[in-house]
Amino acid sequence: MTAFSETFVKLPERSIKLRASGELELGDFGFSVQKLQEHLIRLGFYDGPIDGYLSPETAVSLRQAQAYLRLQVTGCCDAMTWQTLRQIGLKRA
Image 1 (spheres, rainbow, N blue to C red):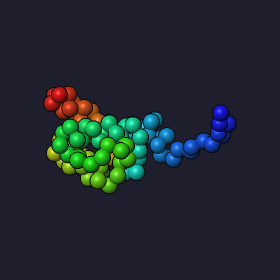
Image 2: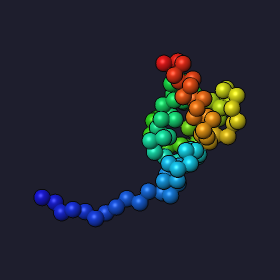
Image 3: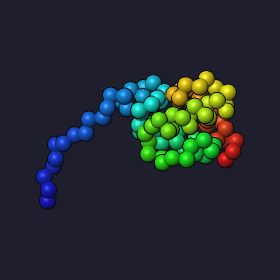
Image 4: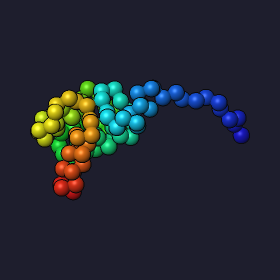
């Protein structure tokens, strides 16, 4: 039997803050980014990996989606972008 390891992984501060703010921006990672990538793939704006990392490639795809959906083009996923992506996704499902 192996001994209990007291090694803890410290998450970057930004990954914790995005839970409270709900906004995603370049460099963020986690489950919310995975969901964003899934929405972007489903809508045909992203063809990269679903890795949960808001990479420059994911941000470019997000900007393209924002432009197409006539939202403010920021490359950040704010509340309005989330709402619109979800609504469009539900209509196409």
